[in-house]
Image 1 (cartoon, rainbow, N blue to C red):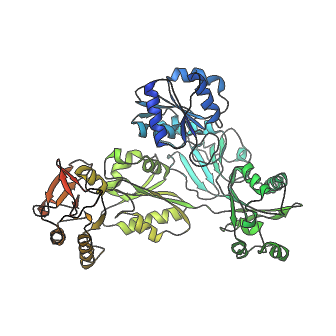
Image 2: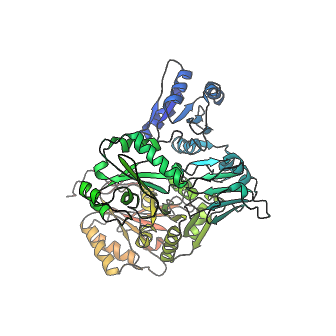
Length: 581
């Protein structure tokens, strides 16, 4: 994001023609944070969008945008991102702010909404490498020079004082987790010419022309104060405490205090000045934190023997700066241990165009990708160079879940993939059984096989419906039979997963008999095999005519309710429910 805002950033849309305005309105309808900018002239509108928004999508000629904006360019770290879309919306060109401004990602989002091809010319993105300034962390030093060294295949050392969930890096970047030297210029060259370095640290270190420093969000500053403390006093005290400890303010992840200070203007203004959130905790929570310097005076005043140190340590970690005081404020700083990242990614039913942009982004964000071999084969072209792939065969769901959680617990960025939606008969459930609070978990929804099948059949899910798996590998058949009976008696449309295999060839027939006992024989039943994949096959029958032998494990069976009809060859369940007399 070009101007450091949190969450969805405002997007200004500028168009000159009727077609451009139509495209802009499509984006505005999809993005509540986007607005069409209008003025007396298109040039004035573009200049206004540049001044007022964090990103600009211009439906104009690239040359015109360049001529208008060239005099306004200042710094890529603060200039808005600019994406240019051509008249027929065939291409979305990331023109300015590809990395720091987020234009590359914005071009991909515009492309997904307008069915346009993103055009990215940033060198690292073009060859699938992560840009050093795209990780969401502050970055200092020789970014362009080190990025060029990575691109050219030169030896680069990445030295971190802890394992952080970084994206995959190419083979010429050697990762080391070790204490950092205090002077990069005096670092030893190991004989391979590896003078290029990336440091990942919250410590202040000298910079040279061959070093980049990434600032991880590792520091929590606990703040206590008297009522009415001036912002300048809190800001100054915190700045001095960080400087004395040799810590970079760019690694602050938040300020923290007791909830009685949630509305303290001086503390809130300090959080705003450093560009971080303010977290507050009840006094009872802070009182339970073991601190080196408790105070009975503080306990009497606010109900906890410590505010600054306890707030800094509320989520654990190591205290780097014990509480230090000014006239009206106290500050303490703790380093929070890195947390691994586990993304539970649903790949959709199979077709690439039914895979969400967020799923693609998470695959490219990961350094380790875990999944069933046949699913990973679908997405290997999306993975960055250097991605570690842990593939396994059918029947190893628990092993995959354990492996993914273990890699995330070790501090890595992990994507655990499955077909459809990761939470529907897929890998999210077994993974979350093993995941604890040492890792951050991100769920990425996917289009389920049931939804893909429904779309091919028509609209069978127009009213209440239920998903049922006929596999008795993990659930006794007696339990499955009871659920089938409940769905049949409740007149719910039923989507049957895992309906039939070579070794389970009778369960589907038994299920259809149960439904037939509660519904007319002409109730529509649809079968979709390989939805959205090669070999896709759609078959429409009834409870009386469906031959179970046509069904296999690559199929989804949709049994209609008593209200489901076939209209013009499509299976439809009305939204309004009318009992058949």
